[in-house]
Image (cartoon, rainbow, N blue to C red; front, top):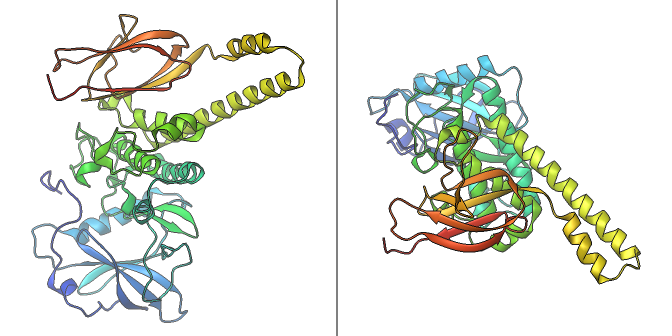
Length: 399
């Protein structure tokens, strides 16, 4: 597939897919189209022998363009079957792959209905995708955490097997029996930084390397959409729920992971979804430990007859000594100064926004952002790093 195919899923289908009559495939009656994408269509289908409902993706063999989408789809599915040792709970199951004189088709689990009920043949049935779920706005914190974990678990299984998905986005996240499953494997390839630049443009990283770090970048944007309810192109705007994201421990952890996943510099991102998931789990564990310690301190204080002055002392004793902080600016690529000292990583390279900086001292310090394209610095004054895990600023339209 050539580098010119930089956006997913908008090419014309062949004439066999354009008419209203359903394709003929073995063992299944195809009822109606329930999904469109790329060079194929997804049909609601009924197994003639069992009556079970499935989803069947159909890719015409005779395509009007120069590409070979059916051949690509077969290659991707073959690669998937060869490398995955077993089906994963967060990858959509493919039950059968077949071919007729007109098309390649494969049979998959049917997604739930958008209402949350099981998939059905009712006329109003509409597949439940993360994209449809986000139409109602951001996910509640617990649902956000659960869906993020399930997305990363499915993606991690592909990365473990040496493959990359290359089209991670909300429309390719389906819900089956309430569980998020990553779907649409038509662009799956073996992990290689030189694979073609294909996928959905707004989820592609700026560096253009379509490797595991590109999947990480896309997954970060998908989780950003879960947190904020905003489209991916709005990243890193916090959205209307910014205060809740700061105060809520779950959203705070997810936000931290998102900022690292979406670093403009690929070397600062997670290497793959396994590392991203592991960091999410570690951060959640640390946040739980901090909440438990804080709760024990509060209960101990409540049971005590110590006066308010000792309570104030207890506050300072309970302050963490080291913290992480998310730094975000508009525009990106600003450097960060804390008390007039440039913030650099372990290699001595300056951090540039947006970024997450770990292991900072929990102090009150003056925060200044500098940008090569702006004459004036942004001086935010003193900020308590122990209290503010996200620091953001915006230059106005003037240089």
